[in-house]
Length: 294
Image (cartoon, rainbow, N blue to C red; front, side):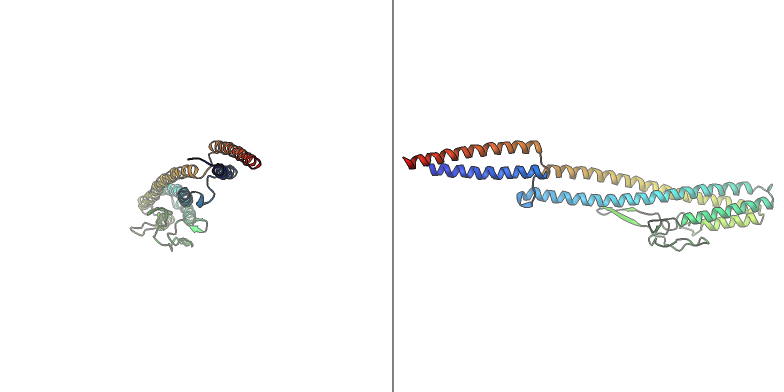
């Protein structure tokens, strides 16, 4: 089929239009650093980008929740470490002063120390973080223990979402380990019994509190062990979130971010094609003029 001059001219014009679009696209990609700047440019890639961006927002939200829970439990564990040290001192006092070689004056002095320790433990049991009380349970916006060590919180536990159908403990059970959830026995009751025995110069009564103090120490250790298990779970969750973030960012980079080396080559190729099309168009224009004059 014979190709007329007008057909050649139309083909050249189409090439110029196509190369112009390619040039604009390449320049835009270089300027913005993005392969596409609207869904209309590439609907399939656009949907992938939206999906991964949503995924990254969810990952960041879950990470914030997990980190906040971790900080909350870290402070809880630090408080319980102080409680454990205080109870170890009480145990030393109860074992030593249970010896009948000590007199009423010695035991009275020891009773004052135990009173101070009990008051300190009460302060620790009312520790607050960001307007929330660590040992108050689910409704943790008010002091869980009064001056006498009476618990007014609840025996529930705050569970926070860190993934689809996945929850993790944000607190330990309300009242624990200061109150035995099974028996209702309070560490403050045990300490008061020891104080009374010391002030009453009651050697047998002092010795009877030794096992009770040990039990309180074990309860604190159990709560700290529970926190340790939760820490491990949170660490696994944070590691999984980091891996998911890396995958999402890699997909985003592939679908959204400009490959500058490739785009520069595309730009150069489009410029070369544009120059060739313009050259052909100019020659066709000259030919048409020659035919017209001839």
